[in-house]
Image 1 (cartoon, rainbow, N blue to C red):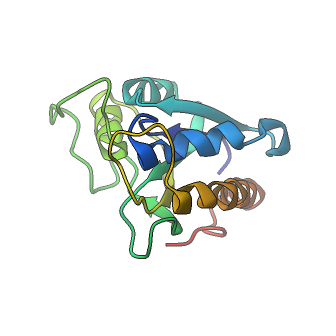
Image 2 (image 1 turned 135 degrees about the vertical axis):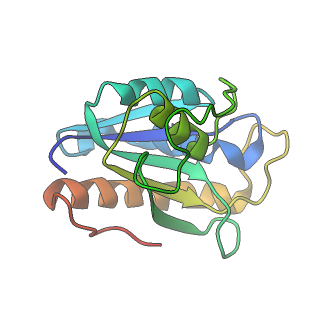
Image 3 (image 1 turned 45 degrees about the horizontal axis):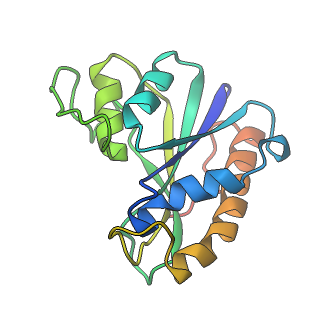
Length: 172
């Protein structure tokens, strides 16, 4: 990777464990990351994430989110997903339904492609949720995974920045 990296915390803090990504990016110290890494809390503002990626300033986006995974709640994984236009996402002009307050990561990537944007690499630092019902706190196993997830984000962005184009630090 030769360009910048965007670490994007996504999720709804009013839906329990769905707020995982937001909590992780709140705890990341941007000064401790390599140069060229931006950290942003997008919450439920998926449209803003898509628009921010349109300028082409970031080659890689690391989405931090609660995702369904094999394993008990609190399980962490790093997944690489197809970037817009690389297969697996709707082609431009597919007219994805846009809800500015509820875009999941796949819908954000669809929208980015529909708007003519692209990003070379998309990684997800995900955590298996226990509860995504109305609550303003994380469940105990997901809360316990926040610190390790912060360390995992550091590992992923440091490995990517040190070894452009390699898969080091990617688990899945």
